[in-house]
Image (cartoon, rainbow, N blue to C red):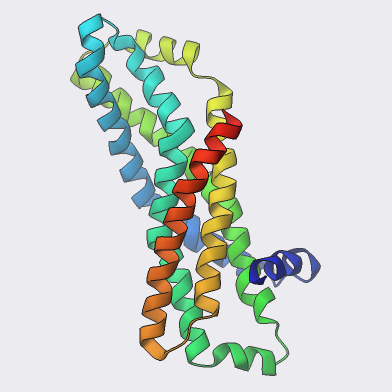
Length: 233
């Protein structure tokens, strides 16, 4: 119900644009270094593992296609979402939970400010918009990581690496991952806000809310990934 109210106020009476920009910056820009590093090495690991198998069949040139498809469909959106849950989702729950136990949310209501509009709507917006942007950059970083390992480390022909990628990897592979990212961003924002908004029990309650939000968000992302993959691909 809290999420539905957040969506309602997102369109009905949204807060000032500065609140949206602040939350979007916190989710997307501040998470960018972590996401890029993880994606870069994930692409490198994919190429490293693939080379040991593909080299047996003289199919090293297919490493580029494997890395691109894997990053676009699965590793990009899922791994990025889990990184954002760990970094930003926990911070959302802790921030809102602290406001709850220190009665700052009650103070907002006294001042005539709707907390669902002020706190929930901008965070939902940041998750829905910010995560797909991060996934796009993660896909690029993963492909670069795969290229560095395949071409620079194992001396795979550079032109064949890119040619096979263009032949086998389709735009739908990357768009499917972006579709997932929209849903994952909504899930992690909604769950994090929910546990923070209804936190109780003092500082220990904030800790429980933060832990529960991270675990629940991660589980929902991994579970929903199966069904989204079955539907999209």
